[in-house]
Image (tube, rainbow, N blue to C red; front, top):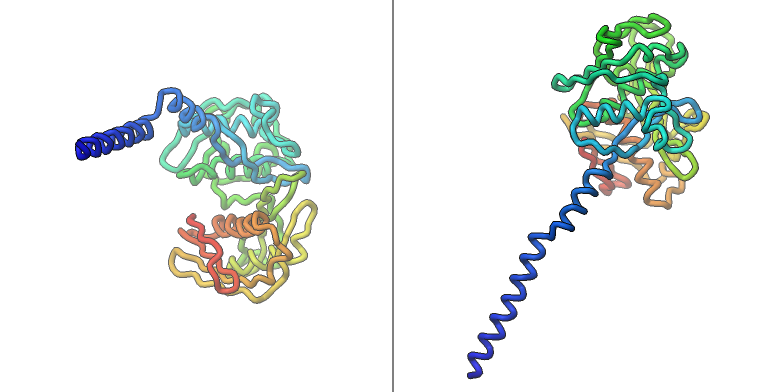
Length: 309
């Protein structure tokens, strides 16, 4: 009798556990719908918009589309003045594609995106034409698997600047540069290094890439750290939290870059989120200047973070 009761209790416990397991593995339709809706409507993407200091800046936005071509169209909408998406842009930032410009078609050939715009695209001011191209290039190449773009105006390839007539490459990528500065003493042996500085709009930290074109032949990681920790980085609206230091060690081994930094480099960064933001500015800079897969950061010989690019 006792044995029968024990077996019955064991059976009841196992049955209850099985029911709980089934409910956990197979959620209700209501829960499934909520999960799908959350997945579809809260996606983050990166666009490059003009900030209050006239820099083309890296800003996060939310998009709804899954399909790549539709996602590209939505991004272009964010970049267009007085478009439907312009109401959702953060305060302090503005789009740059001329008002009433239409994206007539999008086609994708492997890692190349071809964008066909209406003629209103040509209404850009001459002093904004490089910013216009940088904004589009950097926004679209932020999408995974996209490396370059070509721009067409009503089916005609754009191979010159809209206003100045300066010849441009028919296939554009990040080598075009962004927020360019020039310090050239010799036309031979010029190099370009893109460095991501921090900036701030109210409580929102964001990144401003600046392409420096000069005759500096140092290893680019040295240039990046030196610039981010120099007084020269305190330009209008640009922030650097790094202290100046020559005590930087790095090792580049095939597709892995290891950077060793000293704690003294960081200027009272007690907030861990701020420290992460500063490190990420270095990481973005490295990504734009090196073709590698991983960056390992060490602070005082202890691994702080690994980034896979």
